[in-house]
Length: 390
Image 1 (tube, one colour):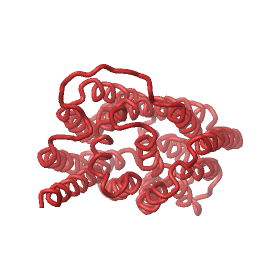
Image 2 (cartoon, helix red, strand yellow):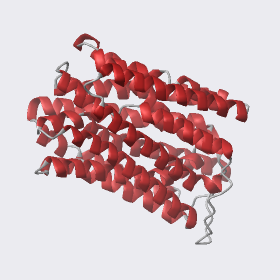
Image 3 (cartoon, helix red, strand yellow):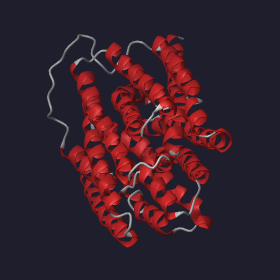
Image 4 (cartoon, one colour):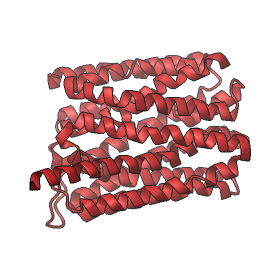
């Protein structure tokens, strides 16, 4: 009876964490869907879009910091508190864009949102890996991503509708409501499962940056090559507006379709990962040149097609890439492993953003760059799967 009760409680916590992500994604994906278009609207320079990509990198530096804290101070309180604080930063920063007086402050608030995600992500993933063990880590992350992406779909739709009728100010301010709901749900999850089995409760432990294995570092290298060629949505949306093939509302709705694609493939992708493990990653690199080509050349009639490859790649980042770390690294080392992975991945994504910014006027060069980075990622993933025997 006790085992059944504990299992039900873990399932409830798992579902609550999914709902937390649903409402949080409504906030920051709603804000991100029009980020490039809004920067163009307020006549920010092209570099502003790339600076938001740097925000992604700084947020992932915070993942390393958060992972370090969670590894050295392996307590349940640290993990839950990091998660709650990170969600609070995002819940407040995006709505405050409505009050930002300059493009510099808009960029700063987008960066703050990414810092919040960086602070919470390693701790949240450790908690999620624990409460999803009963259903399989791949499927668990996949189901979480499905619930998460319902919010990622709802946010851009909400922002697009509010933008069409009321303008940017109301669209951003309205996002405070789902942000507060996400914090209340997270507090409930903490109350239901305050003590985590996967961390020690004896206080400070010694940090050892060894023992992660060659396979983990090959995986980091492969995923970073992937990130180098994966165009950030802010840059893509900026370019779409500059090309004149889409209005701000259409750009927001295209992003909403991408989030819907993400949601639809999340559970099948997670189930595939539980079946074939790391071989799942061989499917992802081929989609990136396709997305880049559509951004560069697609006419208005084909605008929504680019949502398909972008949504699938984003789904892999948020589900099977995280599940891969759990497979490659033992539980006690996962917090820092998530942080290290996020840091290197984020640096690669930020650098790739600057490359794409420099190539915005050269669509053929953009596609060649995407092909080169995707080929490197595919090769490294192939090496990894051979070494891992999966």
